[in-house]
Amino acid sequence: MLRSLLMTRVSQVCHCAFCIDANALRLAQRSGGMAKVEAVATWRDSTLFSDQERAALAYAEAVSATPPVVDDALKAALRHHFSEQAITEMTSLLAFQNLSARFNAALDIPSQGLCVMPGEKHDA
Image 1 (tube, rainbow, N blue to C red):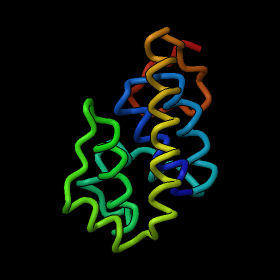
Image 2: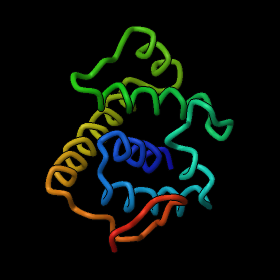
Image 3: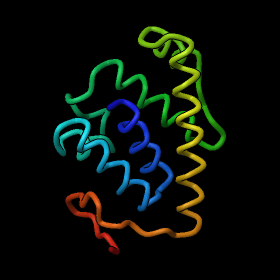
């Protein structure tokens, strides 16, 4: 479920409608509903996310910034919750999702209406 959570957040940060749609659907399926999907954009203000998920979401946003901004405090928070191997794997996932989301956003690939979010218009 953490992978889907991170992929959804990166998709949002990169403004990729297609990626948000596909990854939000996976997140809803893996988390058992829409609660986390609807809260992921405002995760800092939500009580739905664990400390581990919060550290990973902060890292996802930092890696997705241009240029990436991963400071020592964030690295320490990650190491508190994840092994070095898990951090490396997470970084690989985040880099891939950034590539995919930026590629699709640049080509204006539309949402397919797989996971309709409240208040969002889908072009399917």
